Length: 99
Image (cartoon, rainbow, N blue to C red; front, side, top):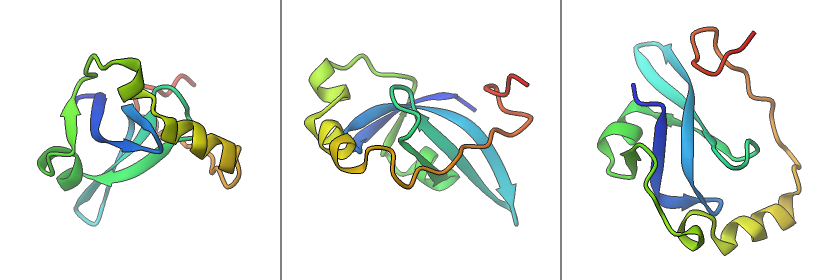
């Protein structure tokens, strides 16, 4: 599975993400995606959403700065300031597990 993805829609003002965990539960596959620029911005998504929805592009698209980091990001950061951030746990199989 490709580890680097670009969201076609802004997610809290950012578009470039890495797939850090893949989990299988009851036959369903889900992915933990973390922003390349801010680890406080992450989401869980399904295989269907990532592969078949048309909302994601494999790899990182070379975007102008105003498209990859939008005003929405700065507004989000000014409001939430790290509140409610959960810890991210990396699976042993993850490319990003360095322990």
